[in-house]
Length: 426
Image (cartoon, rainbow, N blue to C red; front, top):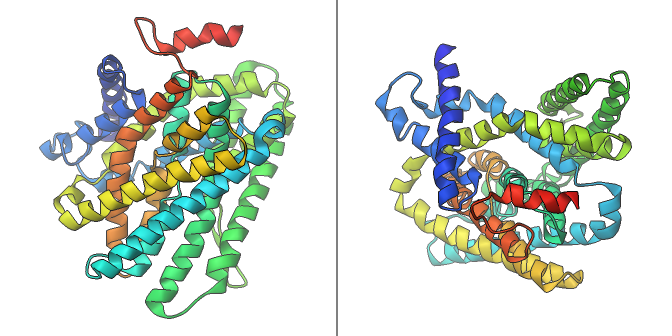
């Protein structure tokens, strides 16, 4: 117990101290937290085997998954706040079209490139692995994007559209991966399961939206019995924790595997709550402040989870580089084409795709499932390599894109947070 407490304290202090350095380099704090995680991980300071100084093994890091899952739940709950009816009326249909099309284009581009690589070098990558990597490529990390937006108080058309698209991206990615994984399994085993390819992913989305709606309504109902801000904050935190726990439950009905998507459930909870609770905006601000240490731990632990041993495998690096280039092209051009179709401004068309590059938790979860395929270890390692690159570079690219469209101000002697606050008050 004491070792884990010291490790968590080291993670918080290390991440925050390193953020002072990255601020001088004008890099987002998210990057600092991820680098701190790498340094405290089992491949750097953890190798010294000093109790409390870093994480000594990947297993030790995995035992802290309850923290990362909880943090992801709060992040998804906060993103649900972006789905207010006022915003959905103005750009809801555009966000849905863009969210679906950019994910589809990315999957198709990565599939085509990796399948072509298979025909050129069949010993490097199999078709089933290529297919699942295409689906995994569609996933975008909501956590890194949200942290950049929150850190710099970004505000404007691109930011609003980005938050909606990132939220929709999870549902689309879930369906694409379920279908692709079913096809890949059929190619490997010679059997095609309609239930696994079509019915189960749709059922997971429907169940997630239903559970999230119920929890959002219950939260609003229970909130009405409390009037002090501290008690309302406490009950809100309790409901998010409860939602995270319920979303981890899985069961079978008539041969169908039923489960929930943590991100979808928590996002829907936040969406329903924010649209029916008149004081939700004030409460969301208080929750954001309360969970900040949890967000720091999320990214430090995520950095510690990255397996640096994959860098010793040339095949992983080669396929990983191809995967990164193909995915980046798919995200950029997929977003650009869909933005033009929906009549977005040139600034949004040119920059939205870049802000969708970060990739982390959702993709890693898919990669763990993909690892069960024959030669699936390659898929897991390629995604790990991609996450390593995207998480270190993606937040900075997101920041630069938001800077380019004028939705956050350049940092000078005063931080971007303070510079943007007066504009919000106006």
